Image (cartoon, rainbow, N blue to C red; front, side):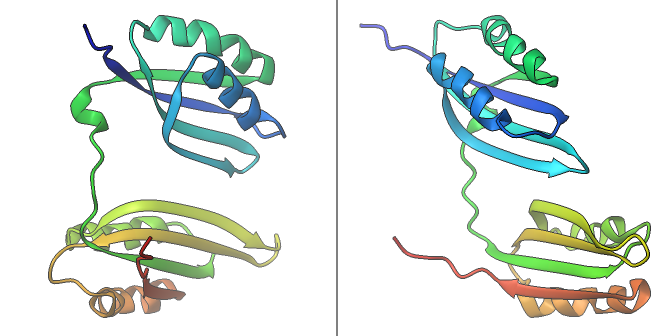
Length: 185
């Protein structure tokens, strides 16, 4: 008996934020028999963005996926993007490196993201998640950046904090680094 092939797609949905977007999109995916393997959803300055990695059994096509989801997105005023993924693009990448959280707080100014991420890249530190928010008031805005990073061999939370110490002074921001302790199941 021939086994069905599993197909994978990256689905992006972007548009003005409002309640019910996630429910409507995931209902459409559920009705198609899709499984959500990975997802990230966030509000960015009044816009809502979601990225999903989905899988489903063939026979199925990217065209059918778009035909089914586009009316849902159009009804919500959202933009839809779908990309077919090859098997080598969906292999789960286990992160064996130590995981840390880096927090950056300070007066809003251009270059905070660039300067911090440039230093991390120079040390081969992989950013696995990054979020920024502007909080405070219009008169005194505070920029907040949270990064989840995977430390390669030879790096420790302390060495990363030392590396970023010069940036704390240069950018006049607070930077904290803490290890994420794995939880055993």
